[in-house]
Amino acid sequence: GGTPEAVVDGETGYVVDPEDVVSSGQKVITFLSDYSRAYQLGQNGKIRVHNHFSLEKQAITLEKHYATMLAR
Image 1: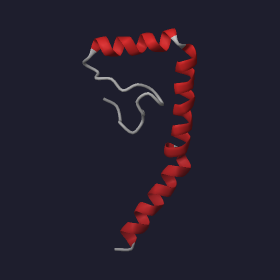
Image 2: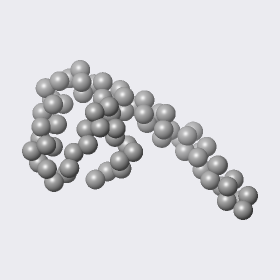
Image 3: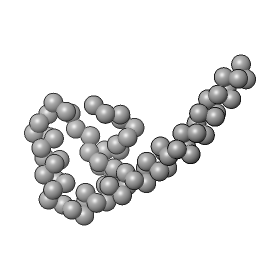
């Protein structure tokens, strides 16, 4: 698992089948052997979290949701 919106495959991390131990292991090796790539994915993830999942974003989304419900 995990939530699919949290990781953009190849941009903020890697999405792998949790039951595919070979693929999962290969991605771990990729992170361990390419520090600059791992760092860049981490930075991209940090930006994604800030842009899509920050407290401010969540509050705006919740406000819109409640406004829609109250308008009914």
